[in-house]
Picture 1 (cartoon, protein in one colour):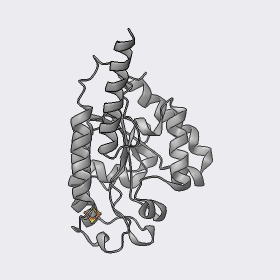
Picture 2 (tube, rainbow, N blue to C red; picture 1 turned 180 degrees about the horizontal axis):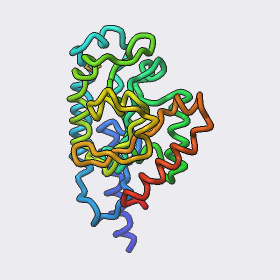
Picture 3 (tube, rainbow, N blue to C red; picture 1 turned 90 degrees about the vertical axis):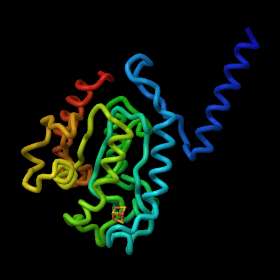
Picture 4 (cartoon, rainbow, N blue to C red; picture 1 turned 180 degrees about the vertical axis):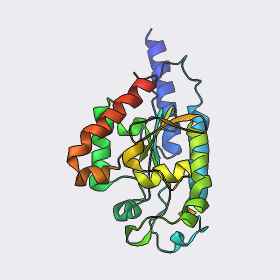
Length: 228
Ligand code: SF4
């Protein structure tokens, strides 16, 4: 019996060391049961790690000139939920991480209110480098950066995508006429993946009275996934 336990703990230690070598600070634990999705987390980690290294030196558009860091995205490579924002802001550019600062803290609280941990979902942006003065990314920048996000989505293969704000919705759906106030709360589809548009956390900081609308949207997301 003790031998069994020590063998298991040795396996766990080896697994943790493996993740550490790959640069992960957490163990990406899926909330699904083993029979709901094949265990392809290992290859996903490697694919995302390799891809992230490639993107980190990208100079394909003019935003590369002013950035401090490429903000590739972070989270669980096997996530059920993929949150997609617009572009890195000042703090994100400095830290190289998406959604830090006040808006990021609000997003983290929303994820926790859903009964999840920030590290159990994946968070990315349409654009990987900060536009100067936090201006909206232009259509050329969005198109140049789009293949990176598309590949991230293919690797993660989420159950639901949640777009945060107008720019992310319009860019992902390739429709600059979409209005966030009209579209939020209703499922769309992005390459066969359900997509829920909702407000950007920065908007909710300015308009806290609308937080309940985003919470309603997230309840619909939870109902749609295997986590319900
Ligand atoms: S925004 Fe995207 S395409 Fe432009 S330099 Fe950054 S990673 Fe490359």
